[in-house]
Image (cartoon, rainbow, N blue to C red; front, top):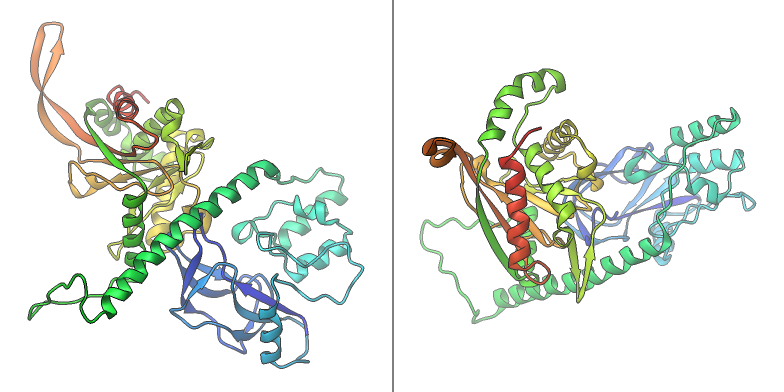
Length: 455
């Protein structure tokens, strides 16, 4: 009987495990490709995991609430069209004894292999069948762009590719990442996980030992009437991540006051026309993101990560923007290649990502790859904050509330006091790579862009 193993997917950089929040299927259910199997929550995102194959659920190996390592088999699917030749228990034992995910095929001469390595693309049986009928090589198959979940190759993708090829049209192909770059990323991520996970596990173990000890090191008194509330999963992960960041990076925070009167007046002049043209509200955040991307192009050491005694200067500028969720937690979706987007493009990306975040619809791609983060506590009319760096980045910008203030303004007739729109920007940075001079100059550059705004 041909079977397929459903594994815990990797949902972000440095993510090593995920918690199964809910199962959408049960043993015996008939499923179709792209049917939702389960919802998983990690330190960075909650996501619904679709099935890559048609078939029948033979076994669910974990229950709701279990935390499972990335790459671990969580379910066994009998592929569509196969008969029950073996018991589910026998299938499970065989599946768990394998190191790689496989799909059994009756054809031994097919040009396409269906045995995939851990980080390879998932290929459904129908995709494999079409590839075999079209006599596509494995190398050619790997170049076809995928529009499915996490870049997976869908039935439509491969049929479109084959049709274009038959018509003599040059199909589009995806460019493989250079081997040296891929190896460097894998090495960095592996080392990051090796450094980060033991720290979290060690602290968790310490907490567990403290709770179980007869004489705990720290006892928090609970008085009559006090309410004890357990942290939810996301809050638990955020707490660990924040403590870890403070342990890893020596934080320094620099603050500057910015006169954004020109920016405020520009928005007032353009917000109605922008809303009619783009269908979304014009906020200050697109302008702030644009100013940050310009500054990051000049200050490459702020768009970086630290790996031991190595400094990794990032080529791409991917800006994370913290979003407050309905449950009070925060998540940081990422605007990829922000420096390549227009102001309208930035506004559209911010609006789309924020909506997806609040509706729990972010994909893994939406929350990974960030190189710099912006958090806007001005939304809550807070004027100054000292944000914690979002690892493995080296800096984070805090945006305060814009308020009217009296200020001394230089004019041809002399100094005068005028009403100006002011706000504070605060930059927290990793002092291992960004010193005070660089941090201050970078923050001043952002302020200069905003003070002289002329979009």
